[in-house]
Image (tube, rainbow, N blue to C red; front, side):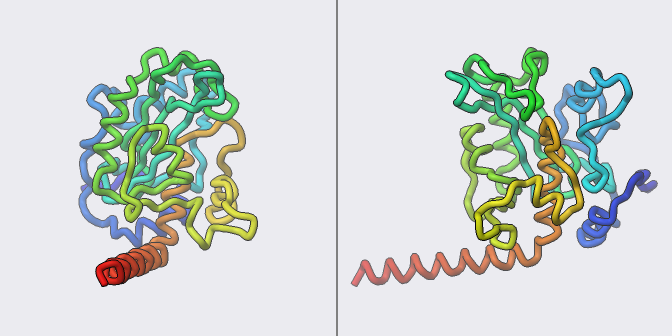
Length: 257
């Protein structure tokens, strides 16, 4: 089978591709929305909507160090998620306005604008990148919530400060299946958690969140951070899980005595 054309192949994704043994046949894209009329774009129809207003053809969402080296948009056992919020209520309450998921290669498997259940009073455009026009034909909250729940079920979920994203989606996920780059000990500093943009710059050589946030970039950055540290991360996660299980077992025995 003819391999996908690889342009701007960065060493980060090439190294990950080799580790993930991507020599087999490509999997068809079975998880894009049925109304996606741009199957040849790895970013789907939302990419097209962003580009509609860009006369010079530039794409603020693409950062070379994070560009996938293939176009396989199949659902994998590990997915990364990032959400963008807008202000509702008095403006200080956050509500979901866009949710993006990428697979282990960084290809988009879901990217939708979401219509909040409450009236938006602050689009927070300078950070969220959300504009009124984006929400006019957006998915209703329950539809997006149901789809995301389906996609992440039984899979390892990667992201940065995932508790905020899951809260906005009114979803939960097993703690043992969460890989949060804001909580991974090797990424922490004495002062506490480190922003995703700093982690991306330090560990990936990628510049993100320099203006309006792009959830595609953010999800890709989180996924690449996980993949580059996957072996040690999984080892420590399993060790912590076994330790907690032993503690629970000892507690049960003690309570029974």
